[in-house]
Image (cartoon, rainbow, N blue to C red; front, top):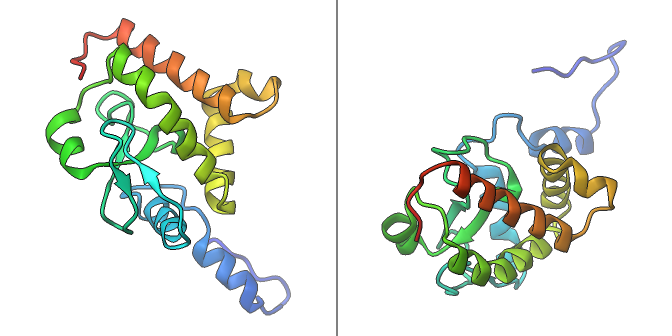
Length: 168
C-alpha cells in the first residue's frame, strides 16, 4: 500500500517478492518468524527447547516462546523469541521468568538459537536490528552472539530483581 510508483515505472517481479516477504512492522501473531524458523528446520537445523532440552525438528511442532513473558515485555523482539516445547511453554513456563538456575542452563541453548537465526538473512537482520534497539551497548563493542546472550541474561536478571514475578 505504501509503495509509490514513479513516472509509471513498472515494479519488477523481484521487487514485488521482496515487498511481499518483507518483515512486517506489526509482528503479531509471529507468523513471519515462525515461517523463517520452519524453513531452517526443513533445511536440517535442529532447535532445542531452552527449558526442557527437547529437540525441535518438525516445522510447526513448537511454540515460539517469549523468554520474558509478553505480559511483562509486550514487544515481539527476536532476541526474546525462542522455539520451545509446546507442553512446557503452556503448562510449565506460562507467564513466569526463569530462575537463576534455569537461566544458567538455558543460556547455551539460547545462544545456539541465535546462531541458527543468523543462518537466515531475514532472521539475522531482525535479530541484529532488535538487539541494536534494545541493547545499544553491544553494538558499540561489536555485535556477537556471546555479547547478545550476556546482555539478554543481564536484562532478564534485572527484570527479575525489579518485579516480583513467579519463576520456574
